[in-house]
Amino acid sequence: MPGSLSQDQIDTYRRNGFLCPIPVLGAAEARQHRDAYEALPTKFPNLPRPMDQYCRANSHLVVEGPRRIAADPRVLDAVESILGQDLLLWGIEFFTKEAHSPKIVSWHQDITYWGMGETDHEVTAWLALSEASEAAGCMKFVPGSHRSSVVAHKDTFAEDNLLSRGQEIAVDVNEADAVAAALRPGEMSLHHGRLFHASGPNTTDDRRIGCVMRFIRPDTPVTGKGCDYAMLMRGCDRSQSRINVVPPAGDFSAEALALYEEVMAAQALTLTDGAQEAVSQYEPA
Image 1 (cartoon, one colour):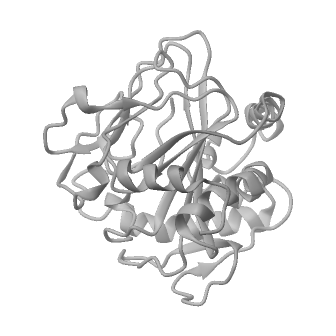
Image 2: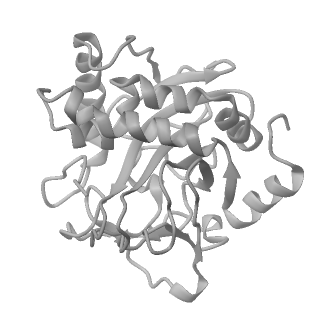
């Protein structure tokens, strides 16, 4: 298998459903990306939607910074080790927990509401732009839980939950089985879409910022109600089951904003399917 990971690392990912930490960026590079992200609200104060919305869903469609992170060979080489040479970028979001924020992410499996079925052809790359320690609310994983099917989830719409539906696994999760995935700025984790994972509150004096990139293989199924979109990052998309996008250059151009609305409208059909309450596609930290 081409890519930057060793066979031992690949085997660990296959066995546990996650791998971390993976050094990707230097501390100075991580700081530059953080500074660019944190400057967005000041640089673009009058947008059609709140900045939190653009950062929490499909930010790569409207901002060049996250696209540059996802296109970094150090990111793609690691992902290629898991998925192979043909890579699509399905989405990017910034998960930010403010200092001393009580916000949490409940135990869940990522692909439950993504319209991909129970695929093994997706991997999430979670890149820390600030310290993601246990105290800051780093992710927790249950090793091996990706080997189960997608289990039942329930919508809580809890106020302190960062997930769009406050969704959580409707089965008991033994916290003693969980492994904390602490990351330093510039380090990355990879995890499987069916892996049980969660995160706690940020009790530190600094923000916890993660750039979260969702990569899929082109043959990943489309099972949702709406059409789906993705950006080719490496290789070829021979299946053409998704609409391939090339976002316009620059940040928040009129063309990029129009594309964003098109994609969000289509994805909302899948994300909100079966919900008993209105579903927000982001939750501010």
